[in-house]
Image 1 (cartoon, rainbow, N blue to C red):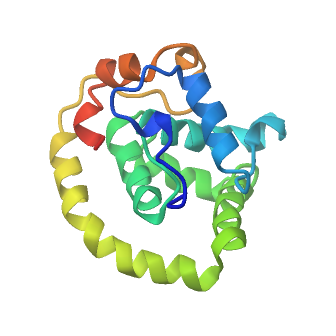
Image 2: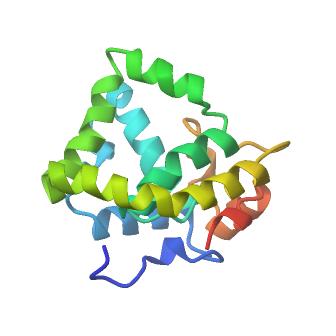
Length: 168
């Protein structure tokens, strides 16, 4: 994504709707598996992950890919234990594999692990800051049940769930 200008949904104060942000996300990332055409049980976790990219203003670079999962655990109703259960679920776990396969297909396995190794030390201070900011949350983002948010503006969603401090 570095060759393109930053997507509008990554703008902290974007007034796009979540639905519009999702359309932009798929248009700018044709190599990502579009979960909207897959069987619902399989697609649910993929779509929720894609929606999280929009809500949290994250692009598909390695920095944001590594940032989005802990940010989701700390600010949504999808916690680390849910993630572990998802990985064990034989119906849903293949969807997680699709996400990794998309990254490998686009960049290669060497890029994937090398970029994790390079990016993680850069991200670590932000992870600590995010963790501290996310303590004592009263409003949790609905991870799997996001449909009621689709026609709301990203700014409105980010304000309601106090996400603006997490978006650059």
